[in-house]
Length: 280
Length: 280
Image (cartoon, rainbow over all chains, first blue to last red; front, side, top):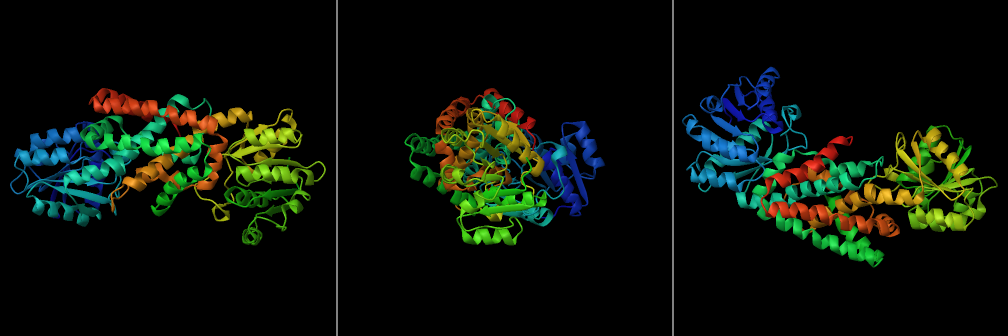
């Protein structure tokens, strides 16, 4: 679908960028809401929104597609609060990084034909409306996770991301999504934070970091509260992945203890071969 | 010092860049050597060197400053092989990432007044002459590690990096350097490789990586043989650091197991506060 009236709840990096990109794409009316009045005013001033009513219900009632772009726990509460305020025929999605919980909630609320999850793989370690930009979703992957029996609305939402935001939609079950993202996204976040946590305690005063150490820890600057929600919502997937890190870590430690250059090189080469196949 | 004739042994990312930058800075004669004849020819063709003799002894005999820019183990062998071939009054340095070994070797060879270690914090995950560029050292930190009694030559080499390469020289004992770099550089390399090693085995086929996961693993593409040497030369410092990672990792795992949002947020916030203070 290509809505005439789009609503966005939450005006951070994702919601703000969506407003900017929808206006650039020519969506006639984009309404938005944030709990922070100053953010609502700025989003309108900067042309990311046409209007920002004082209450999210006013947005829900006036749009054809409502996008929940708050943190995951807030999105769950917003789904509860707003689904009955949607205009007739309107549909909903969210943009959270964990999908089983909100898809299950939509099923419980009998919204399977009006809601499908979305997760644009376009987050940054920066947050807030200041981090929003007009081309954030262009060429980005957006995962679409249908509720049971919701393939039709999932196709409409996939088409929205592709036609309005020039993203690449990939539809998959919420459980598959969460298992995959635990490895591809949530674990990298934890590893970057783990290194930063260690460096915060152990880096000698005045020691300089090279560009590689800065890259490796960049994600650690991400918003702690948002990531607490993500990690807890997906902890049944994240915890086994974290524990599985111990095996290759132990293998390297043993090779170093033994002074075994061949095994150290093989270990590093496994990592290098994989990384060299990944685009920069 | 600002040499009239500079020699560089090893024409990879570091040695090649040094040649390019020295020629740009107007050093009249830059000679170099690499074990690969094709690399010697290219370095001359691209203006990084004035000449590339067939044997490193020919470089050593003709320069005022000789820089060993091979991998660490090769630099040790080159120090043994070339120090007696240096012209009268000529001085030497190296560019390796671990300093105790080569400084101790220089002391054993009674070169304390003719050799000081260097370590430019300007490596990349790319390697070889193709990765060299003309401004690699501008504004980069270069650590200088004197041998016992070698403060004079260390000052000359520090002045070389600053005046010719526009780098920032920081002089410190080799042991302090190695302890600091184990934390600031060697551990980040291992953590990036650890994540890549894990992803190589566990990333579901077709799963996409976001920009954050790419940043976090970028260093893993570094040259495995070079890093094997670095990790083994500095393993007495690297291994305790690796083992110390287990403490914050365990703390996060326990907080996640307990579903303790406050503790997870505090853990992430410690990492975020540190990373937000680091320049991008």
